[in-house]
Length: 90
Image 1: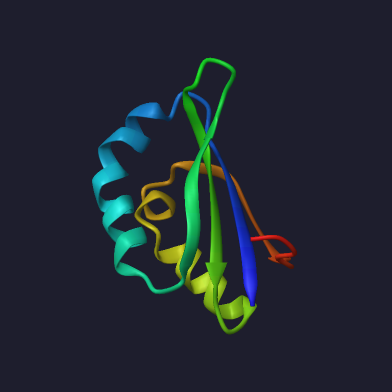
Image 2: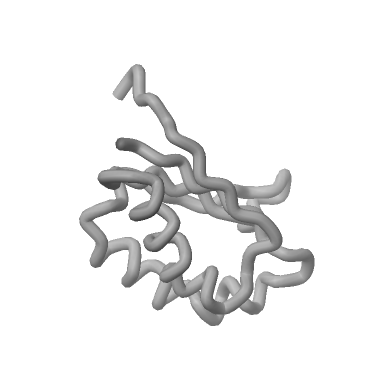
């Protein structure tokens, strides 16, 4: 099943994002669960969150993946939602 992980950063958390970005990217690249991923951007192109499409067996696997993301462990996010997603195109 596909799950859309949508996370929004805490205010003034750019330093947390930058410090943990190498570990986050390594986590993304090491996982077979990641179908697509990229940052959410503000109007000026600054990173303010994340959108990750996970291909996992169930929602519990998505939650486990999300909880182990280095960004989550560092306390970067003010909110994270996991939503079952149905790919229609692509």
